[in-house]
Length: 437
Image 1 (tube, helix red, strand yellow):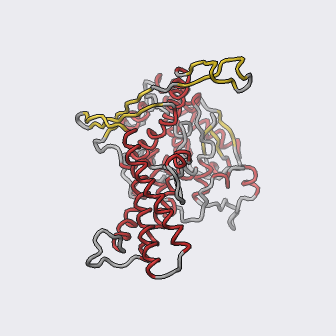
Image 2 (tube, helix red, strand yellow):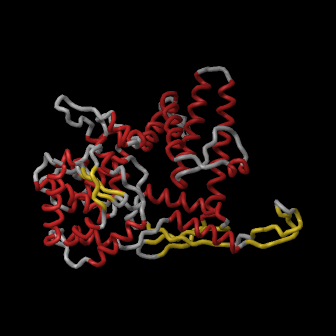
Image 3 (cartoon, one colour):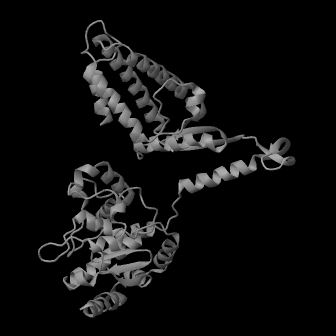
């Protein structure tokens, strides 16, 4: 039976595409065709292979067979299996990839996820859909599948305990199958370069629609990985500012060999697009990355905003000096007040004071995460020097503390009343909670 499936693949895919789909045929021939009886999907790609399950393919029609391979080849041409993978579960990557494919190609025999199923626009890109799906993960992954890829990492172990229904068919959930679909995906620059060469040499695109061809050609444009750029920039700054001196002992040979001192005088100017094409959340992340430049041996960072014209240059270092320390000084005072109230007698008045102080602390943290996204998280009174030495905390951890403080404030603050102008009250806490959610 497996030989029959192989013959069908040879006839309906290789032979037909050689004449009618030269672009798809070229990519198909660049990958090794491998049988895999353990996977719960018909066809999948990654790591230079196209894997197929003969037991599944023997039950499908010729059109479904052809579209199963066509789907995976288009994925390869869009480089979903080989680009830098978004930080999300495999099931999310597969779903996002399916949405992109269904937006750009009309599959007749296969049913893929569509943008309208999630109330998404059908004009966005792979990474955008990944981010949106992750933000609503708990809403659409309600079939009980795990968000942890490691649960499906061991193929042989998974196959050994594959659940079956009464008819002996694979009973795994759709999300588990999607997890397997993108299990082989990983960043691979070599495979990307091979695919780029095929795309550049392609002159006939067969039945692929023009819009999809343009998107495939757009993948040839170089994509900048800011992590690598920053790493190289940091290395160049440090090496260029290194000066040998005998006034500082070498850590291995004392004063026998010169030590090193670094005189950092590097200034950096960053331009930021504020025309509205970039979301506020993306700008927050971007400013958070810029803020980390101060740890890379850079003396000052200036930013200039632009829309239709350039604005004045804004010194980020001054912003940090003025605002950062003011907010953290306020948070430290709140922490000291909370420590004192925790040791005081539990009375209605003290609970009111505690609610007001926690409201203020949440307010200050809310301002910090808006401007710098990821910042140090402290729960005690600290000096500015000690705060500088604290590592950055994750955005989710800070937001959770903000929500906890505002929730406590909402439950314990009094309603707004005459003569309480300038003091926190229940309605203000409710408004902040609405912003957080």
